[in-house]
Image (cartoon, rainbow, N blue to C red; front, side, top):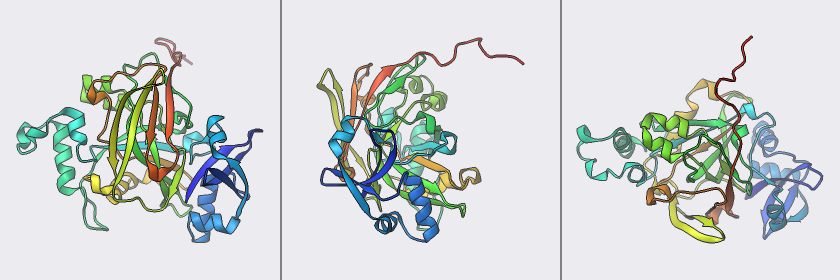
Length: 330
């Protein structure tokens, strides 16, 4: 089952099930978060909750997408109660995209920190069920205010040095009233980072991740297939500037999903009831690694057949939100 959140022409919100080019409204559902919390309270799952409520009228999916009425498939009414985070160096080949140093894997004394943490993941990222494996690279990306709905452009601030796509899968979670995390499912995502800034110095990684992101348009409910192959491409003036395959699923990862989830939710501050978490699982495919530099007007398109419609976003410059020397004093 694949779910979307969308707006009617009058701005009212709805939840829908995607079926054969149509979006069928879930009766009396206004948000996927509320749907999930109700399912947790009922002791069931999302699919059972949808079946309990039933489906109503249909809408043309392509029209909703074209009119930018499709919302991110999970959000929170208060963006401050939504955490966006991620893990890197989780996919086989991701370290090569990071620093092209595979030839040094055998000699740990000669490794960069990137290759060292990648090697640790290969060796200990998939522990037995119920056990904790090695920690992955982890980063904070922002709260719900950085999320861009499908179809909308990513804002490019004046201080940005790059506007690079990162085609990834994201896990979508709600914290139940029992203080436990519940995974609703997965969505295709574009984690969107500043790779030029990161390349200057690895300690700038945290800065480089403080950018917008997008995921969806659909939430795929249920378990993740072991092997997934999708396509990431960039369009410029309507023509394909760059295109490549990206792989995901545990068969293509050096960490298990269970291990990545454990090392995120082991922190008690991430277990606040009612909160929403969007967690990006990493990628091994970047246009930046192939020497591509994007520019305003370019369009990203990330697609994976198992997740329905592609995720499409552009790039648009924005004015500075804050200028040097303008902090007020009291």
